Length: 229
Image (cartoon, rainbow, N blue to C red; front, side, top):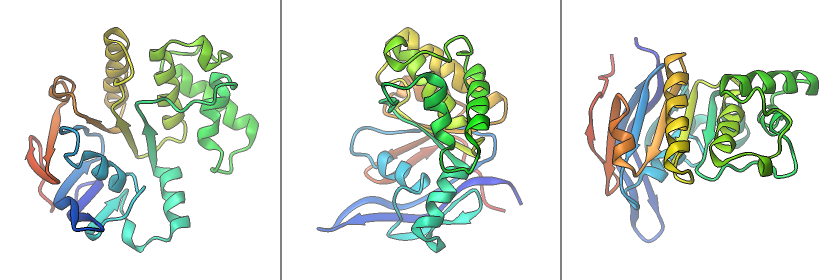
């Protein structure tokens, strides 16, 4: 049996009024993969992100993350699953403006039960991983856009999650900063992190080893689908 981090089988998501955002989606992502989920606005990729990230529940079908069947978990256990197994990076960095880089990253461990001193030590290590060991005491106002996104990535990684979900991670950045962030994502994956990049940008998607295309709520192509054992 292969080691899948994400398994969706026949997953659907419907909303009142007969709106179907996802239609029978089958997706499997193995540990250590680097995957682009690509599609235009309204294609269903944000809904798919929400199901994979356990931010929403499927209407029908099965969703498993890190081996856990999401449908069987209470809201409290879903929160624990997210805290322990999933790291999120968003287009807008969502950093606390008055707190330095270490504090922002340490906040990623707030619900882990790790003591403050250890949280800050691990935050410093995570910032070192993303090349910001020299910017530990700087607040978001003192950082460039690319540096802010790297802080956000460090925060997502500090808990050593099974899965990193990056939603349009270069969308708010200039081209040069976007290149730095995508290079970092490649380096993190090479070191073993499983990463899904959700994007509308086909140029970014084309650079990644596996691409899953979504349109009108369904998968239209998958360049590296893995068949279940």
